[in-house]
Length: 542
Image (cartoon, rainbow, N blue to C red; front, top):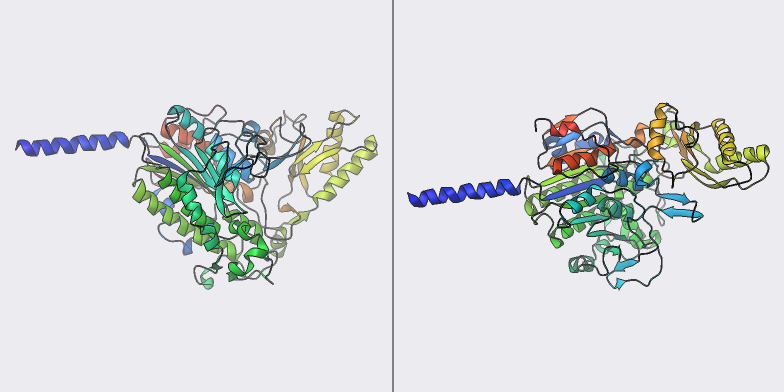
């Protein structure tokens, strides 16, 4: 009898210990699918399994009306906004690249001239290169920084992506590591901002040469092509034609075309880039023992091939539908792995996107919808000529990349230049609205809410453009993004796992609410410039 009482007592202590350790998730997994429109959850769902997107939607919480609330909707600003809980006005990542008045050139959002490439051979020669990367340009703290601070550095934080900015910006300033894909070698690398030497587990992963194996495959539809009923014809206008090919139709023999298309650089442009990242995710969790520590760990994952395929083939292409059906499989594999390695109920996962994507004007016009390409060079030339007529010949425009226009200092006062420039631009076809931060801070137009959150005093242009609906800078293939319209702002927002109720909401939410939601779920301080408005529906009943 006493032995039975002893066994019951042991069981109760075990249950109490489990309850205490389950008071916080063992691992937070943040997933960003680059260029994912919210509607892909539904348009392609007939070909999804039950264990990928559908598992997250059916067993988690689906925030159906999640939007970006600034422009431009690009990769750098998107990742920064998700993890800082604020917008470019505060975190400073106003685009992927912007013009630096101090340096007199464009700068890249993750560039850092003080750090150098770290690969399998150690730290490269002290030469600034396209691999000199860090989060130094990010001016706000991230939720991952707050986790590090709250645990005195005990929590592990790692960011991974094919794109450097997709790994670096989410992981924050205090991350243990950020790893990204090296398009010249097919390996994952970092910079000496994080480490002087790759960890042994990553050396072993790179030695498997998975990128090389994947690029020797043939990309054909994972399901019968006739099942892809929610995309256009396989052969369509404005689709990317790889070098060595005559058209953009399945199948694609990657082994045959890889060398003509950048060799390892081709990896990101096909869905197997997402396959590579899933395997990297599993290796990272095992190598860093994420989810096995006393404190919560955080892994940020950004899948990039979805973006490259969208840019190359467009949002109605068979290639894109196949990419998302394959992405569903990647999620299924990842969720099963997390169940086995971390345990069901022990991890908190969220999935969103850094921006969505628009139909290209060729498709819109063919469909009898509003759409037209705009000539950005023509806009720049018209603006220069207009200003020259008013104030005389001068080099007025320092840099122009929609939506930002930067002006040089000339003899005419800047205020007069800006007023005249706004008037000229408003008269041009395709320009819907012009915002001049120094002149329009007191306006109350709806679009101003976007602009005010977009403008960073140090990094933004002197003037921002808002183009008409359906307008896009001229391009020859696929599509792009960047506007304040629903096409580019409406993204998925799925929550799953630890303490997440089943359900959905159609209430309007904005991307800067992800971080405060995490703050309150994890009982972490809000980052200094973060929104203080969480997604309240996640907490109902708690």
